[in-house]
Image (cartoon, one colour):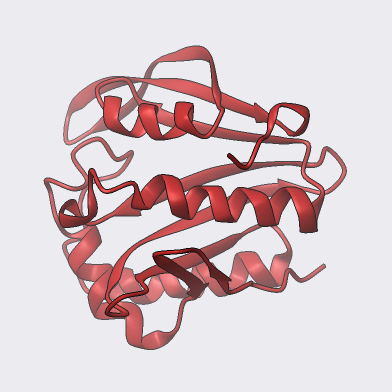
Length: 183
């Protein structure tokens, strides 16, 4: 079952399907070691990783297992990051959420605003019951984004990632449909 990748608009943002012209912006985002310091894989070293990412975006939508949306600032249409759902399971009505934003976009509420729009779409359109997210325990700003959205920290995955030789723990967060509020 294919998923139609939506375009979502908020007060300050436009979430839209990725296109091939996003490859340079994606590479700049994912090759930034500072931005990806808490990511579960190292920064990209080769530009072809952006094309692979875009192909995966198309594939997960085609397979019906998720959506990834580019996030542009509405004021100047600048790409500032992305937000997505993966591992959508229609039988369990569950999915995992992730996002990545350039450092200049941090601290302005853009991740919260984008994720809120995506979650609203998921609860309304996919009738999702549960959304899960994982965050490196050192990444407290990202944990705050999830908590502002109503996610509850459910546990810790001990030493679940090794990136560039460094072992780290992750917190698991969950958001249940009946606990969702758009405010």
